[in-house]
Length: 247
Image (cartoon, rainbow, N blue to C red):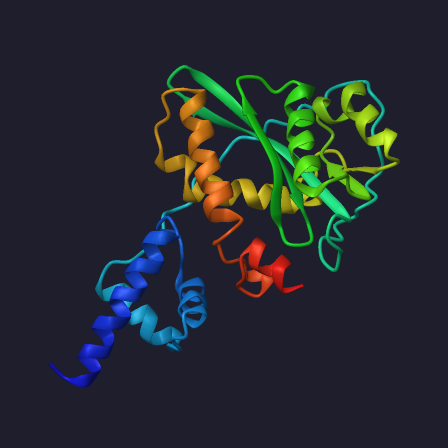
């Protein structure tokens, strides 16, 4: 075996470990960045060749259904955020959204709160309903995590986000409320992107029996992997936790 073959074998082992720890989701650039974090510099073409020869391919994306119900008569806030997703400070802007997850006994619903600064999920809740209390519980978790509320809270126009229950919490601390324009998912693109990643990397590859299985699975993914380890291209291939610690 040549020296090059030995080096490729070592690199393959590292790639396989990195790929496995990423829930089998990392492509070439994230694998390259993860190797760099471990002190190994490898050309992306070399990584691509090794991946191809050893059938190391990320899980494929599947579409998901929106859960937004904006058919209501409640007043909505202006789009104060206006897609200014970058160059924000920690706890300056939180964004939120809801998605569904199927189980053997019916749908359950996940609400998340994301701090735009490091794209970190600072609060979340999952239940078998998507009433306003689902979002309020997620917000309560975020408040405990961050020891307070943000300057701005952005969401879509769903009925959960125009509820008196949620508005009382935000108004009490004078939080600026921002909402996407009607029918424009790009106004809440960060939340949509997170759900796309979550579905692609986890949900579509699982068969959940019930709510508790979903809750345990989400805890492992969000708290142990996504926030702590998953590399984000928008963060210079750092994880949310790593990005915040470096700032």
